[in-house]
Structure formats: structure tokens, C-alpha cells
Image (cartoon, rainbow, N blue to C red; front, side):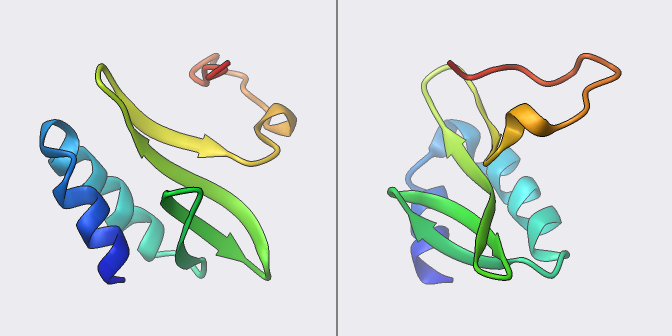
Length: 79
């Protein structure tokens, strides 16, 4: 999707990381879209996960992330 490619191209500091995350997400059955100005991945019309890049970090955000089980304590609340 051209909009996602453009989003990643503008994030020079995190370009490689975003490209890797995108590649991983595209290997799933989710559809790629731009929502709220960022790449978002949708399955059966439900928002599942988004990509974001900021000054000091980049990462994924999960819609309904509070419902995810995190036995290894690797997830961080973005709030």
C-alpha cells in the first residue's frame, strides 16, 4: 500500500524496524490500511494492530491490548 510505504519512508530513524514489522504483519491474513495517520492491520473488519514511530521508539499497538496475556512481562502500556 503506497500510503504505508510513504509513512515508513518519512520515519528515517526507524525505517528498518518498521519495514521488518510491516513484513511480518503482511505475512498474516490481515489487511493493511492507514487509520489515524498510521499503518493499521485489520482482520474481518476489526482493527487488530497498528505501527507507530516516535522520536525515541517505534513499535506496535494492539487494539484491545489490555486483554492480551503477558506471562513474560514483555508488553508495555503506551499510556
